[in-house]
Image 1 (spheres, rainbow, N blue to C red):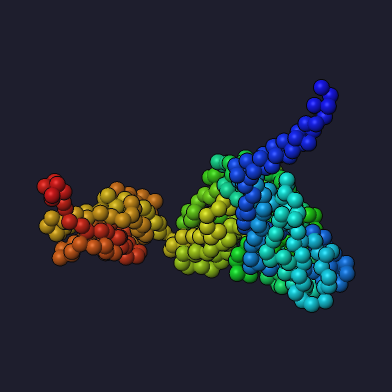
Image 2 (tube, rainbow, N blue to C red):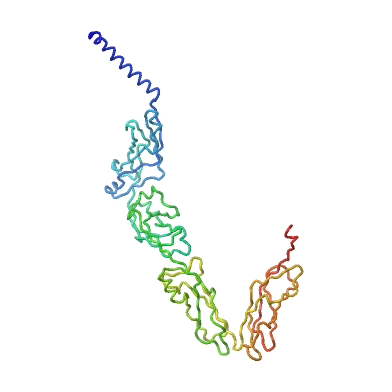
Amino acid sequence: MKKKLAGNIPLKIMSIVVGILVWLVVVNVDDPMDRKTFIVPDVEVLNIDYPDEITGKMCVMDEKENPVRVTISAQRKTLNKIETSDIHAVADLQQALSFEPDQVMVPITVTCAGIRPENISVWPVNLGVRMEDKVTQQYPVNAVTEGEPGRGYEIGTVTSNPEKIRITGPESLMNKIDIVTASISVSGSVEDKREAVTLTITDKNGSTFSESQMNNLKIDYSGKVTVTAKLWRIRTDVKISAGYTGEPAPGYQVEGSAETVPTTVSVVGSEEALKNLENMGNTIWIPDIDITGKSQDVEEKASLSELLDEDLRLTNGTSDDVWISIKILPEGSHSYSLPTSEIKAENVPEKKQVAFETDKIEISVKASEGDINTFNINKVKASIDLEGMEEGSYEIPVKIVLPDGYELMDEVTTEVKISEVSSVEESNE
């Protein structure tokens, strides 16, 4: 029995070999070897500071460098599972043979998990980098905000820490730098905002540096700075007060008080500055205007921003100009406001209507007899004559009839608009 079994050993070995061959054939038929090419857009550069240590120069990667083509040989099922993100292409600057020429070729090494190196090929086999002189320069940091703060608040101050930054890079890139910016979002904020942010660099054509360009630069503080945006509260209806000093020419008098246009403004400021403004009666005080020897109205312009305390300014969009006017009239005279609704329009053209562009006009009256204080504006009669006028806007004289004992000092005009009367039937057409 033992001899019979021993005699079958060669047959058994052959059967095993045949089985293995059959298995290999089946596997290769069902999952054959194949090749697939991948496009890898980026090559990681290692030891980027190495050329600086050797030559004192810096390397610059060409942004127009063609993508790397990687071909992998493996069984089809394995290839189908590989994504471009699984492939890692690197160029180690320590493997460069020489840094003498301006253009240096660095071997590209590609790896992919589960794939043996001999089954990976790459084209091009080298990454081209340029060698340039190293330049170091300091730049101010332009601290800015994005978005609008919450209702009732505006940006007060925006600062960065540090206020300037040192950048080192290859000469060609350094020559392109125009503005270094640190931006912080304040959208909807009603409290001060403080945040460490990454710098962005704008070139002289207004374009933002790409990630590749930024990678070629060495920036202090790892390219980050802390930006602080202080939010100031808005205060509306801040009064403007003006006055005068001196005396007008003999025979003349100042009528009323100095008037300003505008009469109120909105400001924004820190809590301390707003408190100080409150202690001043929420009023911006304009220095007195000298009217010494004046015989006619005085009008001057002032800058509001020059009158505001530190940490206080006008709200965005508010005009900086304020006009101060002081009426100077002959003694015994006075000016009055007459509503334009009291002006009678005569000879209005047929099928036309007239509208006054202002709600009132000013008339200056002098007492030829008696006391100006007894003058009654309600006894004034005013009219305009529109005979022969067509549609349009006009500035026309106003006929003023005063009570006995008074005389008009200046001619009076008013602005009117004449338009055609539309009927209901016309509007429905």
